[in-house]
Image (cartoon, rainbow, N blue to C red):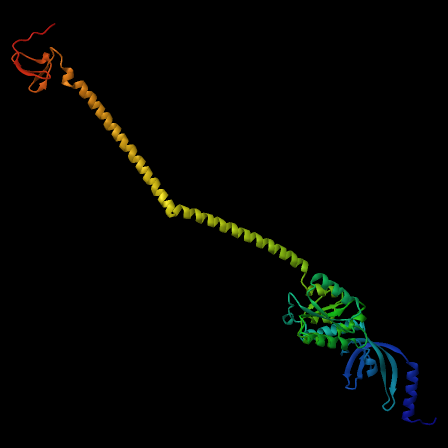
Length: 395
């Protein structure tokens, strides 16, 4: 047997291995991970008993949807190759998938965890939205259904707003860079609100909004941003970073704009309330005015003069009534005196054979006289003194 060189041996081994293991699918745990400045990725995969070196060249890393980490369990697709100068063999990787979870789901969770740690999701940094926006920038496709839905909602809901469309590539190659550029451009327009999003689609279609570059652009923007990507069930990284998440693009416009119908109803109710309050104020003031007028009339000079005049009239009537009552009383007394005078006038009483008997200036009866009494006999014109000589009383 003739000897061969080491190079020949390694070359033969390389040929044998590469033709025998043209494509293999190997599962194992990542270790010794190195992301080289050239863009190549070097690592090993191992199980409890063995280790194999692996390399993924830059041309294939662009298809890697998640970030490789030490300790991660993966499934590697590739072929065996031998590095002849050193006689080392390794697995040349063309595709790497997480073992047990999809690559997109893993990439989503990795980026979410990273951005959360950086504080991108903090509620304290979320910007508030103006109640009545005048200008809204929309970062989306110019040809998609999303922009038409948003225009329809804006027209029906609050047609005083100005919508500025920033035509943007929202899926496929170059979409991430275009979304970032559009967000930065829209942020310079001094709009009140920015809506970033697109209509529904597969997770691959929506994947551009799970990009860290897009997350950075949203986070750094000064304009309040609503993320409106896909349908209600779709959650993207942009939803967590933005100041608010909308279930759909139409919902984003509903969130951004007030409802003119509600405001018209409010204006109607306000008008009614204003009219009722004004009516109540006028009614109250009218009642107060009437009360003041009545009080003024009661306390006016004229009312006081009328009151005094009425009091004078009452006093006058009372005086006249009392005066005439006194006059009548005096008149009645005079009449009585006159009548008594007439009845007691001696001239009217003077009759032939009749005299008045008085003793010691007191009128007495004839029956009270005794013998030897001195008495006076008086008529209307004559007074006679006499003495009783005898008395004879009849039985």
